[in-house]
Image 1 (cartoon, one colour):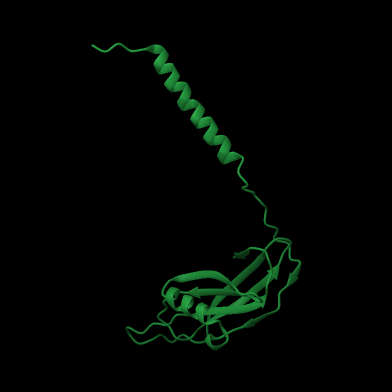
Image 2: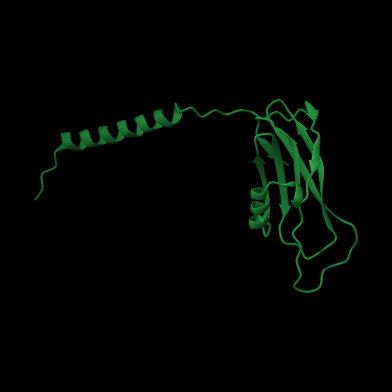
Length: 147
């Protein structure tokens, strides 16, 4: 037969509660910051659509690694910001990716692209295309938001 020490249980319970409270305070008081992203346009951004020959080698490798699935990412160099959007494997060759919006707000860059077609033709069975767009623009130190 085991004798239960009520004071021991209370001490353990108190210790558990204290650990939970301290953990909550540590998480709550870290340097996390919630910032509301403004969507009000400050200005349209000038950009250049780049083919593979005008992109950094590392960026071309990233695109080729990711192109089978839809993707959206940015790539920064010392001088430029590259914004890249891909639509993954498609069963058509007549697809174009268009930049429909690229603008700066107070604290973000907003990007919107669209996948368009020229015709209604399809590829032969088994052939696939990987439409993507990469644009180069001035380097800003704000996050990029994809619509």
